[in-house]
Structures are given as C-alpha cells and as structure tokens.
Image (cartoon, rainbow, N blue to C red; front, side):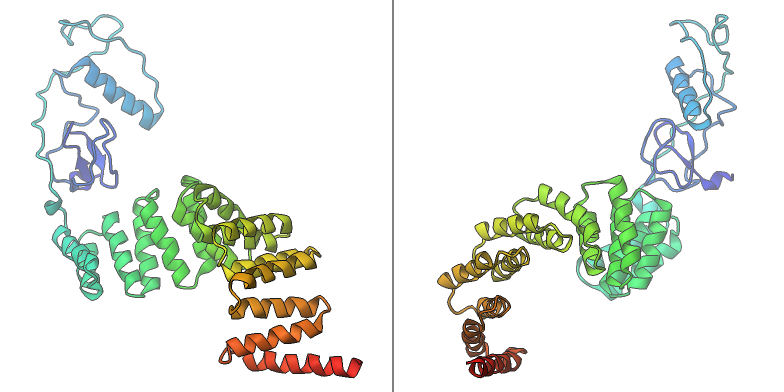
Length: 369
C-alpha cells in the first residue's frame, strides 16, 4: 500500500488504512485526517528505541487483535537498558522517535469547502444549490462517507429518491454501522416506492439498535402498507412501550392487533386511546367495529351512542351507527341515521349513495309490512 493511501494518527503516528476512522493503536479519531497527509511512522517491523515498555505493550496488543497472535512477555524494570534485557524480555532496536504530525483541519480535506457550502445551503432550504455543491464535494472526496450521506439528504429533499439511494448506499459501504446513513437509505427507498427494500434496511438498523425509533416506525409503516400486520405488530408493541402517551402509536397498535386476530387486545388498546381522547371519532368507530366482530352488538352500538351524547352533530358517528344498525338487523333505525348523516354532510362523496341506501331500506320495510 502506498504511503499516500494511509492515514497517519496525529496522536501516536501509527499508519492506518485510509478507510479506518479510528487509530488501530490508540483509538484516536482519524475522521479529520487526510490520507498521506503526515510523515509516516516507522513500520511495525522496525520499532523505535527509546519507547517505553508500556508503549510496546500497546503495540503488541494491537497486533494480537489484528493478527490473532499471542505474545508472552515481561515489563522492563525501571532504569534497565532495553538493549540489555533479561532472558524473558524482547530486544528492540534504537531509533529516534518521529516528530508528532500536525493534526489536519477539516478545511484540508478534499472537497471540504464545497461540502460546507452545500450543507449550509441545505440547512437554509436552498436544495438546488445544496445539490450542486455537494455533488462537487463527493467528486473531490469520493471516499468520504459524510459527503455521500448529506448529498443523499439533499437529493431526497429534491425528490430525486433513486439518486439519493445511490448516495446513501455509498455512505453505508464506507461506514456500514452509520445509523444516520442507513435511516436515510431506508427512507429514500420507501419514498421512492420500493417498500420491500426499505423494510430490509429498516430491519438492518434494528439488528444493530433494537430501540431505534425511526426504524421501528419505518418497519411498522411499511409493513402495514404491504399488509404484513404481523411484522408491523412487533415494532408497534415496542414503540408503545417506549412512548405510552403517543395516541397515534397506540391506535396503530390496536388496529394491527385487530388485523392479526387479537380482538380483545385491540378493544383494550382502543379503549385506552378513548380514555385519554374521548373526541377521537375514528378510534370510537374502530372500537365499535372490533366489538361487533366479537359478537358484542349492543356494546358496539353503545360506543357510538356514547359519542353522540357529547357530539350529536358528528357525521362520522352517525354514519358508523347507521351501518352497525343495519348489520344488526335494525333497518328502521339505520334509515334515520343514514338520513341524519346526509343532512350533516350533504357534499360528502358517499352522501348520494347513502341517501339511496336509506330509501331502499325504507322501501323494503314498506314491502315487508
């Protein structure tokens, strides 16, 4: 490997591969260090003399991690010349320690200025300018994961989801555990209509971070759109535990429970939402439907009537009650509720159809009598 392909640690001078973000010896961050930017330290096969025993223990420990080698050795006694070790010690050659390299600033990275301008433009909402400058940054620093990630964000903001996917993929290829890039990748796939692929990436995030809220919501959302309510259910349960006061999550959980056959669980979850937000007409309708599916017709009708007691002009409640009454074999009461719905919402898309339905039910009643 050429020296220009290596990152030299500004802390200890160790040579690292260009794609490594932290020094293999001392753990110092290399994210602001350009490859080949500082004078290389002597190679591991040519260790320097004058180093302390502790320093060499650190080097050998790194070699153990990298190569799987096991070393047995003894610390040099204080004041003992390393060139005259005891029988259980290693012999190291003497060299002068290297001059510590000057740490690289962000501005020294290829494309740093273009990236800064692009990021500022994106933060200010100037998406076209952000895309232009970030594209230049990526061209100048193709191995910079952050450049690809932010460029992907800009492309997604510009509705260029397929292009955004490419950039997020590149960022993840360079930094596989970067959750921000993984989330951006999954969201770009989802917004581009590639639901199955986005689900895979969301699940990849959860494999690393099981409580990641973005990924949990993504899995629940995408799985629900695909009709995979069993998959959505696991994520919704976890979200409900994490955010018990989020009524949207609680209602989504209740709906997923009903769609997977757990009607008692769904009823309990819907009642929990209504206890905190009694004006939630949609939740009330879903609760009534779950009760009706269990054969609890009277309880289901009572849920609608309780809502109408405080909101007598709610078209949604009148419509739901009318449907439930008809299915419960009470067409005369259903006619009255259908007509009240049409009166309250005469311009609703289904107003004419339900007016016709009321007329037909009334005609059937007259014929039956």
